[in-house]
Length: 299
Ligand code: NAD
Image (cartoon, rainbow, N blue to C red; front, top):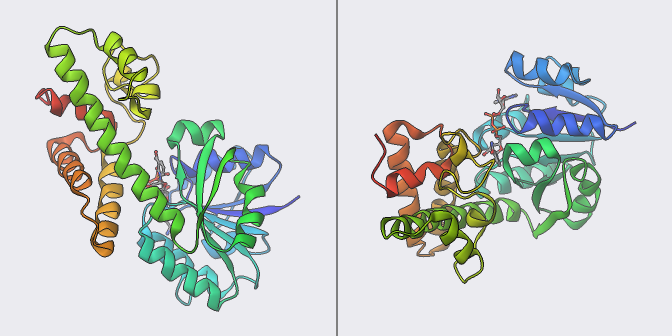
């Protein structure tokens, strides 16, 4: 049986670790949060007292942490894992972090002869639970081929992509989520114009799905209450994917656009709109709640 150290067992990491257990992996788990750790231990994981203890005698290390500074804290520095892992260990960071930090981690891993791969996910909590996440990986091809075995225990085999070289996974993720924010806002605006002019949002959604406005928000995540069962819109915008996380991802995209001298005006506008939602107290609502700001009905 192969052993994996799993660091960060929150909303995403918890169900991902449980799917690894189901697939027959032995999981050494560590999280700063005792309840998060207890939850995966009840499913069969072994609790570790530190990230370093979790990563002792393992085949793979996987981190699923909030942001770049958390991943850096766990991996780098004298107490970080890179200084202590045996050469050749495969380390996967599935967190969504900035591409600069990802590249810094790759450089440190190369120095320590560790096979590192940035491997952020798409799909959210429901896909983490169902084991159908998409992974977008950045790093060397041989590390990617080794990573596939472990990633396919948590994701859809057909959605495990080698995005390119170091940091490419994080670039793909930030660009994707910027586009997601833009088409969600556009979908809300289109539906709002239709409804204000007497169209039934369900009928209009079917029309747009069969027409050139078709997109993922319409297909599986309709923001209009009463149109699509099972969406956050049907449950008072309980997430799903939180506005706070969308603001974080739009910040990563904005920084990439700035560094790359790309004029991402719509991405920037989407960031402003989501930041305004955050300021109005909707940070922990699902990102499709942006319909309320389009309809001027935030109160
Ligand atoms: P979360 O806040 O629920 O979980 C993060 C966990 O990391 C927490 O349990 C926290 O205690 C733990 N942690 C923080 N610092 C730590 C440290 N130094 N050592 C050990 N544990 C530590 O976040 P989440 O929703 O699980 O998201 C994790 C990552 O996945 C983020 O980068 C997020 O952007 C990304 N992501 C989230 C979603 C989503 O829908 N939630 C979707 C795609 C990607």
